Length: 222
Picture 1 (cartoon, rainbow, N blue to C red):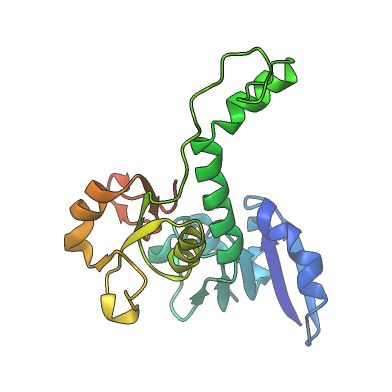
Picture 2: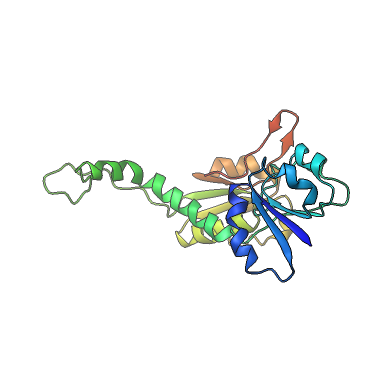
């Protein structure tokens, strides 16, 4: 019988939803990333955000490592046994794009500070009678958003940013894979400095690259 392991806090949360879609008989194991290792010799499929050298040493039946996300930065690909397939997932770009827009609005409108003040009974609004009005709030409209990495997530962020009246500049490794008709600028990595110069906000959606000294680029930030 096929043995499927969900290892780690995030992966373990997917066990029950995954069960509802299974069409073959299998045994499912849910554990943390360290706790799975004693049983790893039985595992055919690993669903996890990480794959370590310790897992590789314990693997004897492993056929597939399925990452339930886009990032592979915790996967030690050099440790993957020969013939083991590695796959990641997408479909979460809408949620991430909405978070990015929400974060920009929160920063631009100083929402965190205003919320804290309101909870203390201090309503900092231009509509408060007898109070000195605060400066007019800045707007996202006519601001420039730079997107470094114009894939699924970058394109979803751009779509929502344009709805706010923002100008969008983007960088993509292969610009032929995207249309730049609705962008203020679309270029290759050589245009990164120009995008940074123009941008009021920057979204980094590049791959997380590994060097000998550790990660060299962030996978996402606002």
